[in-house]
Amino acid sequence: MSPKPASRIVIVNEQHVIGSTLVALLQMKGFSARYFTHALEALTAARSEAPDLLISDVMMPDLSGIDLAIRMKEQCPTCEVLLFSGHASNVALLRIANERGHNFHLLFRQVHPNDVLSVAGKQKACSVAG
Image 1: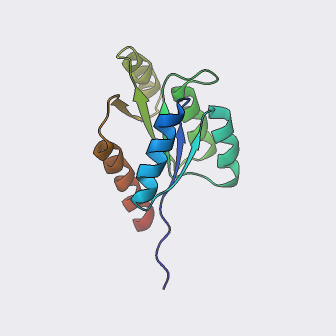
Image 2: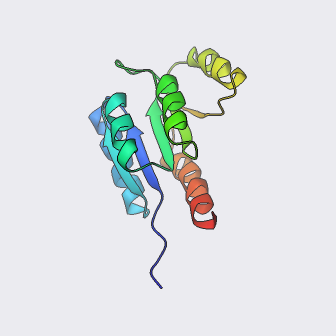
């Protein structure tokens, strides 16, 4: 019997060093991770292979992380969402999304890698169990 595949994770961040570091970290822990600098590219890629987890910055130029998360959930309803923010003001935007029925996780930068792995690990356990 072959092992279960790792969770598919999509990372969206306009800063290459952040995205590539997260991909490397997640791949070392057995996850299948892809990185995009533009939200619309991630949505297009998700049409052919739906992710289990979206990790995105909140503030991006072409589409906010919250708008990306909403569109990703419409396209891939089982995809979990983890948003990053360096600004406390984004909490209000997240609160509005939550009031509209969207349940997204939010971590503030400078997040420890173990926090990311913890959220991804919970998603991986759900994917394997499901």
